[in-house]
Length: 553
Image (cartoon, rainbow, N blue to C red; front, top):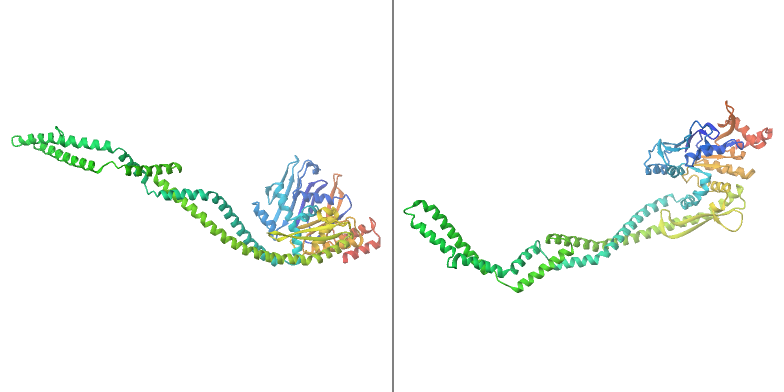
């Protein structure tokens, strides 16, 4: 709700403060007094673009500030949070236009862009122009109207909780199906790779050990020759090392008795002699253990070739790395098989949820269809009463296969403004003035059920008078029981319905310049103002009595 509007240096307004009532505020004044200028200033804080032409005083900046009570405006609070803006019970929106022409906007003293301003302010103020171009083009708004008439609040709440679970399950299923599709592309190949590794059945470090065995078996003859030569040199040749060493030992032992100092050396040579005998024995054993086995060689060669092929294929260098890849493939293939089970489970859950959502959506659809005839008739009656006797209004509801937050219906309001037999969407069929009256007729029927921002009607009564104007006033009054309204009017029947009546006028200041002023009228001033609207600048006693009668109704 708008608590206060402050305007400084905008067009022919020096300083102006509007403190509107919480219900119906009517604004009157002579043509050209500046009523539209006040709306123009308000439009600035709603996100309209501005230029320096509005600066009459070129030495001061233009400032427009709106103070809004948003303590109970949950939708606006959510929007503030979504834009990381500070949430306060009173939201202050300020727009400044510098002398240079630079424009800045602030929400609770935080600078914001015009785009952000345009996104947020529709939750605070609904101007007549916005009725035609936004609300009536929004399917959700039209559904809200029908649901308010059908008293669907509780049913919709139940449906939306169920739909939330349905949507979440649907998204989970879609994600798994996408994952499955990606995995299915690789499943066959991964399975082939896994089977290849499983069939190879390598153990840790096997390829490396087999490669060493292959080197050994591939050089059997060379190894045997070397072993045989070494053994022969130690024991069997004419000058075998052990035989020569034995002779040396015998010589030293022969002088041991006469030359004791040689004993340690003899002992060392004896140790070497014994060690060489052991070496010769081991060489003989090694020679006996190694033999040429073509079959074993071929088998090992094939195994090593397979190992090297798989190492190259998977771009690794060790058997253990290959086994790690095998484990990864087992996990991937296992998960791919498991996801099929998950998908089947979710598909069953979604089928059950779809049935539940469909049943509740059908109840909602039936409720909507059930109120259409009465709603159409009531709206047509109201349209006739507010000066549109030739207009015909109807509602079209179509059901779709897909569900959304509101069920599976699309709702469209249609209008035939002149009995042409051709029904068009409201925003295409009604003129600006007609649009305001259509919106008034629609919203007056759902005033208590719908949460609406501050509503501004700019000359909603244009082109009507008498009983039609009286009906417009009555509808505005009814709507204002639940919402804040600001209505610019030229009709006394409408002006008299205001809980607060503001009068816009021009006044010459001390510098001789003409400026727009606004004041809140008391009861006596209202009588005079409304009498002048009825009888002109010098109203008759009859006009005064009529004004009093209108104000007493």
